[in-house]
Image 1 (cartoon, rainbow, N blue to C red):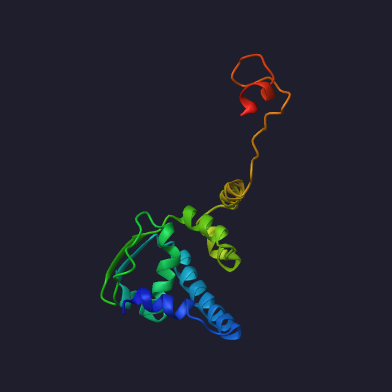
Image 2: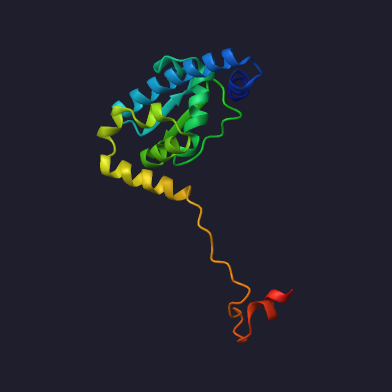
Length: 166
């Protein structure tokens, strides 16, 4: 079984609520440690064998695969996770602004509030990214044409007597 499938099975298998809560609590703490190490070192590039990287960050290989799954959309080039094994070579470059945005999107407060971000993104830039994120969640309704408004086709008739009669 590939590490990615192993990760999916561990993370998303049917368990009772208490076990699932405990799993995600433990995983989030491990994930937080990996991010702290990467952000503290200002390490934009992660490279090496998956198994060795997992040891370096002090997590199991399947949990490191979960980390890669979570960070994949914040990389300059996405990784092909499905076929990875412990011996797979990883060469990934993180885009920190994209990572911060994706953490906001995932509502991962335990990650986007890490103090290690202070050395990477200024507070002003983080506020700008937060504004950009909020803008993606804003719904903008387009103006509706009223029945008695002039028709948009330019005929001079009321909309209800022209294009709106269909």
